Picture: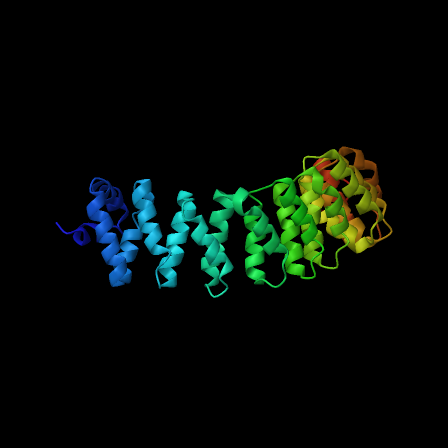
Length: 320
């Protein structure tokens, strides 16, 4: 039976493995079929072959991917690169680096090449990738993909690069750098994240706060709450929303202090936060807010007290 007749059902999930088993036992025949199929340029057949990659032997998978990533059709090239990423094939990395450097290549081709190299051989190409991420002359989208990919390589050089990117002139790159630091979550980045909390871009500030919040480090949390207590009310409100998710005692204690804020919006958010994450030591401050001049503050305070089991508002003629 011709191989084309065999692989034609590879788009059926129940047939993929039996077809792959046959192909793996007839490697020479399959390699010849792959070579002819990609030379003839039939898109449908190429896709049928690519359906099998995850079930092929390493040698046959490499043969298929080698042809696919050189294909003139972008869709086939991208499918081949995605297969290379899933199977963590390293033998094609030198060629993939050429793809990254060639600006005439489609973005998706360069993007997947970046992710493959960063995940399979960061030692050989890490320095070049870090350099590209800092170079504003490169495609903004590709720089961001490099940053995302480098989060899988959390060494000192990479952390230093992410911190340096917090000073980039482009806010999208600063956002990506702050996001990356939130993902790798290492104490060595505390100082640069604290500095980024003063960034002019809201999303950079938000990701910096999240990064410090989620870091398993008491110093990071202490610096966060010290910052929250001294910034402007608008920033205090932002930080309350972001920090209450941590449910840390040090954070909840700081939010409780803001129940006495002269700013009504901050009081609202602080009272709301006490309802989201009940904090018993805040009970007395919450009771004082039951008679606050602002109705929303009153409502949030009552809900927080009720969650703590402190008062029966029905008996007091107050409703939640």
